[in-house]
Amino acid sequence: MEKNRPLYIFKYLWDQTDELHPATIADILTHLQSVGITSNRKTVSADILALQDSGFDVVSNKSRQNQYFVGSRYLEPPEVKLLVDAVSAAKFISQKKSMALIAKLSEIAGPYQSEVLTRKLYVDGKAKTSNELVYYIVDLLHNAIHEEQAVNFRYFEYTADKQKVFKHSGQVYEFSPYDLLWNNDSYYVFGWSESHGKIIKFRVDRMEMPKLSQQPFQARSADYNITEYCKQVFSMYEGDLCEVRLLCENSLMKSIVDRFGESVKTKPHDDTAFIAEVNISASHTFYSWVFTYGNKIKIVAPKEIAAEYQKLLKAAIT
Image 1 (cartoon, rainbow, N blue to C red):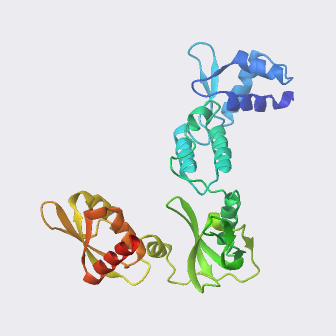
Image 2 (image 1 turned 180 degrees about the horizontal axis):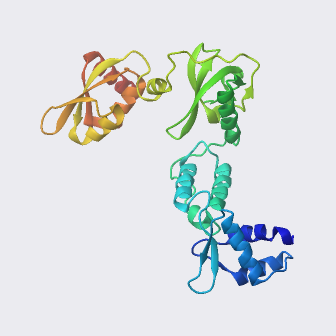
Image 3 (image 1 turned 60 degrees about the horizontal axis):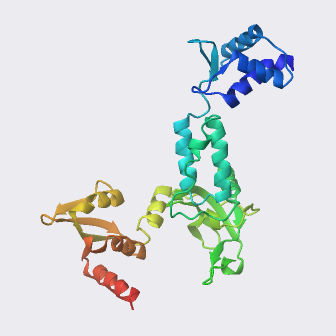
């Protein structure tokens, strides 16, 4: 054990110190004695110097008595806090896995950060998935994408009485995964589905644990573009595009820009509103987005799009 003394010293400093909680030579000697290593101040000082010369960031504070702590870690506390917040907000990570991952992140940040980092584990109103296998599903899909291997799986859905069942009586999907995407707090995988005969998406947390398939991998087509597919699926572009004119209150300009980009065509209507000309698919996704803003957005043209929206509103209350 004596020849490994510098490693024991560094592990103690890693586990027990930071800038606000340095250790003295006496602290280190007490620790070494507790693990059965006999030493003295001179040898500990020499060991710390050897660690510093070898590139370990052991900081020495000589303002009073010699005090030592680990300077830089793999991630600094502010960086770890951002990761913890992301884990907390991600509903595709289960409660159990969230707690385990945050505990590991806390260890990276230092021994005195745990309480701060676990200050809030969940975001109000966001339900966590109950699928404990999501970690492993994501890992398998990442590897399958990298190695260009097909996978197969069954897919969950819910009955009217909220029972979880396999879709299409347990159909096994043969699937060539292309990209993973995190959108609206859910994880999705895009790829070629043999049964659909086209590129579609699946929610990762609703997949039974996928397995590598013996079926050949369907390579991406030359015109495959994940950005365009995301627009089609998530941004109101599910079919043929058409131009729609929207009458919007002035307070919604930020929302229009956020949704359609800074290049969106707009012009003043009067002192309280403006007209936005946008290209969309007349889908339920579009109509539900308009409804989000109540009477602050009105569909001006085409008339058939406005009429369809009114029809859907009437159907929802009858």
